[in-house]
Length: 442
Image 1 (tube, rainbow, N blue to C red):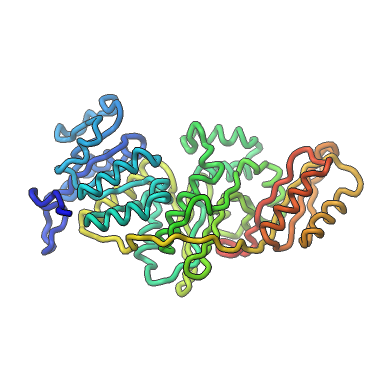
Image 2 (spheres, helix red, strand yellow):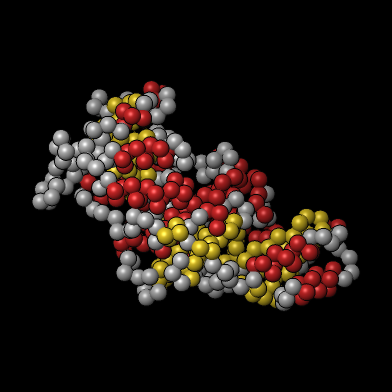
């Protein structure tokens, strides 16, 4: 395909390394992130030689127009107006899969590079979009899709490109980390903490995709694509909602020398097999995972040769995400190329690991309950490691915990199904894995 930029001055760095004209940037989506990107581009005079904002697309854009923006910035409601021959890079910050995918595909087809913060788009269509970018000789960059201002994608793709990664993941959702951090330190209920997160801007009006692991699963799929070179289908990521966590769980976790975090882990086995999990898990207090507080994120990677690395910092918010986007724009302006493959091979599910579990029950107390529960676990080939019971709770609604020795997830799930049929429960039993080996252990 002939690049439609050939009839205009070259942007960014030209072949001999001499500077060309500034890269012409258009923004599609002018919410918190898009407006933060515009503010950086307009306020930082030192960027003007490299990056120039030329257009903003948004519905009802007149209500969002920035009065201080120069008259050279076009404010439009027609997406085609930001996919014209005067645009070099489209910044997609609208979110969601459609119509964002349609816009990005069309931009790449027209020879326009794309910078996006859209983790769901990359998780579901990254292989297709990367192939389209390679075909048309342009770039697709998505540093901001994972962990906001933490440069995780660049670190994995470039900084440790010489290693063969076997694990990626971490704490990838700031909303969940804020909620679980607060539950461990406050007396508020789960719903009260979520409400506080909304008030502080850490949670959406409907935080379901955060709490149930959908958001983190998409980010984990992006990390797997970059770190493993594999397309990880979202349906292959096991997910558990943090809504199952209560304040009493945080108390019991502390007695075990742990705290509870939403942990996202993808482990590669062999060339293409991947086991992936997102959900609440007990992590030791000495683990870096436990020390991530509030809405911060932490990204971890394990390499076959280089061992373990971690990166942490602000994982959410308009400004942190905008910094990652502008950094991608500068990389495009310098003529940097991504090192990843254009076609990612599809991952296949790997066997799930054996690991210890924390199981919490709330029962109407009566003699023989512990023995009967232990008998059910034994019937599924599971050994009980310990029993914990906090004093001071009413016998008609008594919470207690059993920790299990390492077993298969399928074993634990089958035992819980059988236990749930007993007539002693005041609420359904719940189980969380215990990452007893610390940040990189099982």
